[in-house]
Image 1 (cartoon, rainbow, N blue to C red):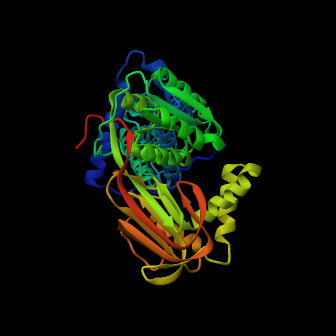
Image 2: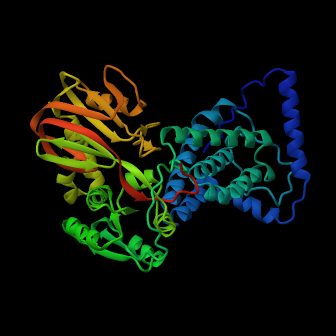
Image 3: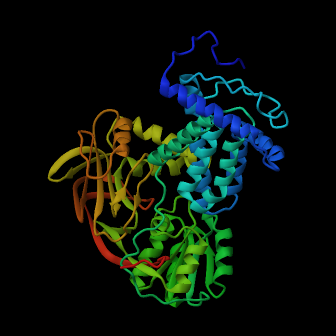
Length: 498
C-alpha cells in the first residue's frame, strides 16, 4: 500500500481559529504522550492492533450472536452493519477529504508505539469510527450488550491517541461519524420497539409451574431447543411435538383438555392455533419457533423467558384478529392478508425451496414473478376495476420506517393498514417505491389507507390469497373485516397496562 498523503500539496494559509484548534490538538496529544498509565502499556497497543480490519468487532459479534437470544443476534447483526457502513464511509470519503499527516512520534515512548505504523491519512480515525459504530449499533438493539461493549470501544478509541497514531480530534471525529453510521442503519432497518402498549389487559389464569398449559410444537420448525428450555422453565406444562400434517388435530385435542393452549412454531402454525383457541374460548400462549415470528415479536414475546414470565404471572392482553370471507371460504389472519405479487412469490418459492433451498428459491421466485408479462391481480377496488401488483392488508398499523417489513406498536387499534401497488410497467420499481413510503401516502404507483373493513370485487377465479404465509385460492368478492379484541394472548406486561 502506498501512502495517500500528498506532500506536494501546499499547506493552507493562516487562519486564527483553525490554528488555535490545531495548536490545542497538539498540546492535548503531547499531554497524553507524557502521561504514564499503569498497565496500559501492555494492554492498549495490543487492543489497538486487535481492532485492525474490524477483527475485534467481528469476534465480539460472534460472541453476542452465540448468546442465542433473538435480541442478541439482532444486536450483533446491527453492530456489524453499522461498522461496515462507517468503514466504507471513512475509507472512501473521510480519509481523502482532509489529508492530514499522522502525528510526529517523538513525544511517544517507544514501548507504546505500534510495530507497524499506519500510512494512511490521520483524519478521521477509522478505528474510532468502527468502534463507535459497532458499539452504538449494538446498544440501539440491546442496551445491555451495548453497555458491555462500550468500555472496549472507548478503550480502542483511546488507544489510538495513546499509541501516537492519531490526534485527539481525529478520534472524536471518527467516533462521531461512527455513531452517525449506526443511526443511518437504524433509519434503513428500524430497531424493534423496546416495549409495546400492553392494552387492553385481559384476566387469565396464572400458572406458576405451567400446570394446565398444553403446548403443541411444530417439529419441522426446528423447535427442539426452545421446547427443552420451556420444559425447564414450566416443568408442569404438557408439551406435544408433532409434524406439520398433525398440527391441527393435535391442537384440537390439546384444546379439549387445556386451561391454556400453547403453540410453538412459525406464523402459519400460530394462525392455526389462534383459530382453535378462539373457538374453544381459551387464552393462547405463543412461543416463537419459526423464521420470522412476526406476531410473537410484535406482541413482545421473543423467547422462553418472556413467555414463561407472562404465564407464571398471569399477564395477557386482548388483540384484534382479521377475517376474510370469499363465498363459503373464510379464514383468519393475525399479521397480514394479501393478493397479487406476494401470494405468487410464496407459491413459486414453495415450488423450488425443497430443491435449491429457501433463500435461492425466494430469489428465483421474485425473478419469475416480476418478469411475468401479466398482472397477478385484476380486481374492483373502491368501485373501480384496475390491475394491481399488490394488495396488502395488515392487521393493525404497520410503522414502515425503512426497507424491511414494518412493525406494529398496537395489536388492538381496530384498523387495517391497507397498501396498494397499482398496475403498470416496472413492477420492481413500483414495489420498491411502496416499500420506502410510509403509511397514509399516495402516488401514481401506490396508495395507503387505514380502514376497519375492505371489499374487493371482480377477483378472477384461481387468484391466490396469502394469509399469515398460507396460500389459498379465491374468486369473485373478497371481504376483509376486523374481529376486535377477539383473541387473548399471554405477554409480559412490564408493569404497564391501561
